[in-house]
Amino acid sequence: MPIGIFDSGVGGLTVYSSIDRALPNSDIYYLGDTARVPYGNKSKETIVRYSLECASFLFENFKIDILVVACNTASSHAVDILKNYLSIPVIGVVEPGVEQALKVTKNGKIGVIGTYATIRSKSYKKNLLEKNKDVEVYQKPCPLFVPLVEEGLLEHPVTFIMIEEYLQEIVDKGIDTLILGCTHYPLLKESIKRVYPHLEIVDSSEVIVEKLKELNPLKEKGIRRVFVTDHSPAFIKLENLILSGVKVEKIELSEVCKI
Ligand code: DGL
Image (cartoon, rainbow, N blue to C red):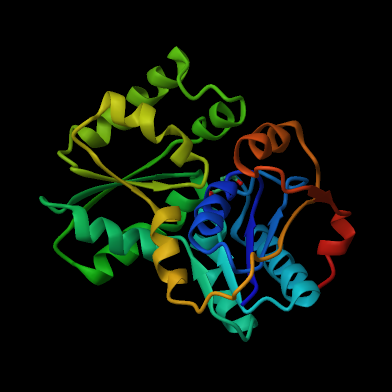
């Protein structure tokens, strides 16, 4: 059962890595749209168009049976459109994250952090309230977390300053659970835990795996192929950490922009 995963860039490698470990026998095709990252500050129209193009690239070339939208921004704006457009199951990161947060919260006060576009879409907030109208949801865009992760400043003093700058306001509301609504943020999980040890941190990439595990794995080690539209330094830095030897293939953007 070939699985396609796409993200705007490097962040989705955290999702790739969870799926890779949990489903070693499945074929996995990853596309990082590194030539057009970030998606998080783009308009809905652009995010939807880019998402349709990435999904089509994976579907047309590799006959994937399931699509994982590893990007929170794309999941927030385009998952329903992708579900209508493709004839295969499409899993975004929002719903698994929401389900997990509702499972772990004790006081019903949940924080959500993400890019500007994800927070603007209110995707997490709407989904949480649809499933439980009694929870209180506090959102906060944390745009500087993405470049901090890409610069590898995971435990730098500047990162700790920004964690407090962004999070103190919603921590003061009494949240006991924090949804990491951006693919880059799991890399800051330990640093966030150090500042706020009492928070239950929800990382959608871990929850997605549970959904995929229901699939029937094949007998042999599955294929791994990773594509990028630009082999950027940020990607190279993270691929060395996460991909353990999988060769990254650079493709022309024109191969993705076909619809
Ligand atoms: N992958 C994006 C997300 O999860 C973060 C980077 C971007 O802005 O494209 O929202």
